[in-house]
Length: 287
Image (cartoon, rainbow, N blue to C red; front, side, top):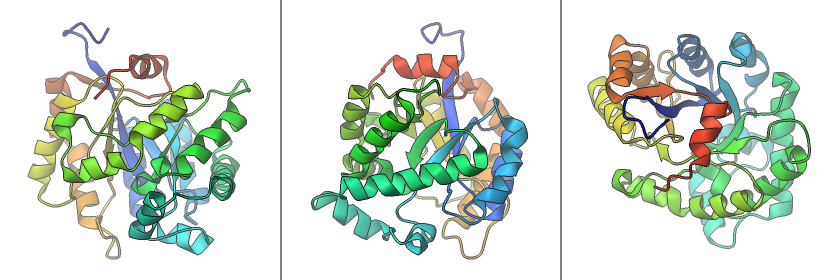
């Protein structure tokens, strides 16, 4: 299907940070109901998760809902296992996280997800890409295989935080170097599907027009089965470091201009857990 230029490309557009605050949850739910995104990643350590997940209930079967594995937010620090991003990166590089301890944290977050969503996540990614940090990635694959590998439940797929070479700036290269290829290898050995590549990495600066330009590039560059991540919210929260960017993203993704950009790029937003999504990811188109 994807080899036919007349057919749309199957791409996942994922809104990260659901439940980080009310504006993010409300904005993401609004975009999902309008069909402007096809996935969202939940921060289940947030005290808002239990109440905000009700905003997504009517979208079951139309939206992938995944676990945004968290080691670096204020919620993770409050939970007792969290570190600031710089400290987490240093730990990953200088020996890695202890897999047994990481498994406990991952199980706890999966339990929190399922307690309110009443189903396993469609996929797992990571806040600030921690899913591929050394020690965490090994624990994550083991936990997912043990928890879902021998059941009738569809096993969650994984995000690889790796932009293709032509789309990888310094920030993207650093993110990928934290373990994207290593995660892909061990996930493949366990039979866990990984998304093709990740787009949407930028510095959160600029205007709505700049974001529209970036999104247009990502839509055209994305290969089938890849993920474009976004961080929309309804309004900017004063204590949110990227609050202004969230508001700009929400305004653009809800606009007629974004609909036109999808048509121009011949992109169809799909769920990665759908048959078409699994087929696109299984094509293994390497960045």
